[in-house]
Length: 345
Image 1 (cartoon, rainbow, N blue to C red):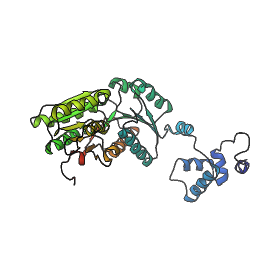
Image 2 (cartoon, rainbow, N blue to C red):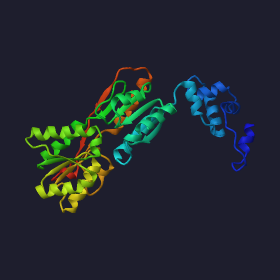
Image 3 (cartoon, rainbow, N blue to C red):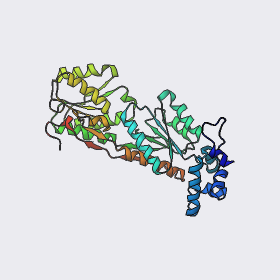
Image 4 (cartoon, one colour):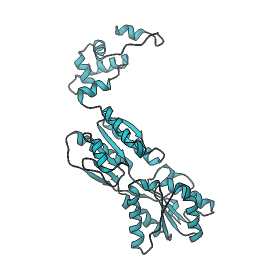
């Protein structure tokens, strides 16, 4: 039977029969149990038998039935990750780093994006599939709703200020990072230093932390808190108003790199030189910050660390840990030309 399947051309009419572990065992000259052990990476299999099974798997095109393995082991081997969007490059970086962290643990990763209206249904789809754990990035639902939704499944919230009981939290030190970048602008002599975020930015819990970090530094140095929360449509008008009032010499701390570059675009159109006439800094240290010509000072959230820690916490929960864990990862200031009136070393 198996030989006929292998010899048949791909263009042959009719559906091909699914290759089973029994077929693989027959080809490898071992028992079906041995094939199962190899598929599940059991160390008790002799090297020669393992090699024979792997060769038969490759030759036959056998694929593991994920549903059957999930039923047998009570584990899907898959993590579900829910992101607010992929428009912000930081979320794309976080997804990539999480994929690599899952690869290192031989886990699969399902990624979905969702706005606040569809967040509940997205989480429910992950749970229906039977994921081993959930990573919820900047979720919008209330704490008690998230706790009820995820009960019984290990869950970690990332890039938020808090998590409900039963869910772990991994976040960057947003307040500390914002304080670092605000201090850098003031040390360079930019005055006043203004904090800008959009109303969309404010939907994230991290916005209040970053605003607090900014405010703590400027007040400690005797400057008024100058936070501007603007709509996407009004950001151009707001920056033009700042230019009209202060001329040059001021500094701007943006909520993230995306907002920073929208600010920079208006400043450049006004004929100002970034770094010399005005200072601008962002947050997230995405690829945008490394664009030649307008190298942006930014705060690095250490996405790799966030991802590895989140996966570790999911696995710990799977192994029986019941206490809640909160980890704040230190941020790092990456200084570039946008906040330097001299050469950046």
